Image: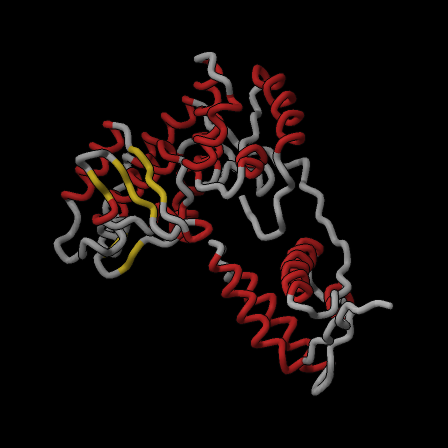
Length: 330
């Protein structure tokens, strides 16, 4: 005789509160879950329309995701990942296990990160240093050269760099505090003497109207720099530097500053005879990754001379580290 309690059905009226508890749980473990919250709301609206005032069938998620609508395969795969996490959470609370389609988007093997050469970076520095002041953007000619140098030398994400305030920079110890970064965790980024000097000169020359707790990168005292503005300036910089843009798969992209930083760091470690396995956790923490697997996936060692290292790392890491969950992004 089976004495286990029956699993409870999920009523459509319970969705909102269950989603809220689920979001609180995920955020308490460090995930921001902003895009995921939108996915949950999409599903809630779907259920309210198709299953009003009733229990949700166990295949509701399966049907919703497999609908013949205008969502891309990648979007459906992302939605499936979010709903899988929620369904597992509800199952742990005694609710029925929902049926979810196995939708996987294989990584595009055509994607190749662009690792900037010394010659390309020299051309980029010459281009950004020639930016002329413009009346409507009085600080753009100052902030773009500094921002690009910071991204290249630190491997920061653009969102992290644009959130830096004067209060986040400790020039006594040459350290930048990145607050509420990915996974909502703070981390500390050391600066070399050269980039610290550039940053200090930039901070000292900022407008008196900019508060110390306001972002340091702005193109007008009343308007902070946005990622879209930076992306546009980056593409213009490539053009003026004679670096062809080869599309979304081959770039170069602004995020390739981060790729370049990571690969150059690995190159230096390898050149100095260091064990990459030993230093991988250090680089993972520096880059703000939640797992070592993320760092291994993120760093694409594209140089031919490191091909043997790449092969050995793939074998080693596949045996040691678990798969990355659907919650995690690089």
